[in-house]
Length: 372
Image 1 (tube, rainbow, N blue to C red):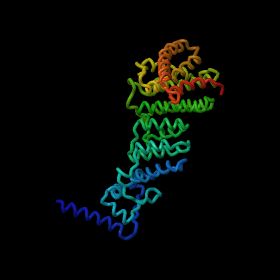
Image 2 (cartoon, one colour):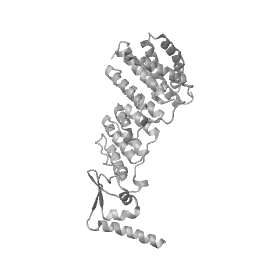
Image 3 (cartoon, one colour):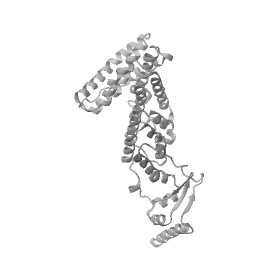
């Protein structure tokens, strides 16, 4: 049995050698019907040579092999074929590109999904660097390389900080190819906070607030899309009913009305979002946090301060609806207690040289009503 296995292996080796004997380099053409995944991803030059290198490494070490047919992947990954590739180069045509196959060891040559992705995010320091994100995520999805939820959360937060919410929205719209879904509540929060941050970055100007509100409503629409199936609800709630999600949409709608529409609730959206926010708050059993946990206190403040602000703004818009106004007053009392407790906890335990995101959001709220 062992002799027959060795004989078969030798015949296989001989087949490969014969396939490349007649020329220095043999070219395999993967025509569209036989190609595994279409053309390879292309990336635009970035602001950093180091970032370009990371993208190039992912392309050659991860994305190229994922586009190869099995017989070509065997040449690349099986060590017994590596001497053949080294002595007699083989190329394949993928799309419009001719790719020289090279021996690869997955454990040694592939970039780490943890370390390399962290470096990639750290190096994306210019807005144009984020132009490659949809293509990069699509290539990862094709290669069946999955990012952890915390990595995607960090990715969204970094993009928001750079004012590149548009790149995130494009990835969500192309979810079938990027694999980026609103299936984790912390990711949903970051995406929605990005819409709010868009208004904040525009200093709550009329155009900036309008665009932020439009983006927030687009996020709500995506949450209703079956492609973005939500798998882990909080207390049975779909994310488009969570108070910290819909409350941000309320804040943007109310800020638009108060700051740019002379306090008028055009199309009744402030009243509608206020009603949904109040209903979801009533269903939320617990808003409190662990005061010994600064991360928890910070997250609580950044989660509820915009909602409280949105309700307070809404109360000034819907004065002609006394029942809704009274409900807002009742709900904001409980919310104010939680927000104040979180803020005081952070102020008491945060060194002066440390920036807490929750405090930053809270302290910036008065700027909403400054003249544009």
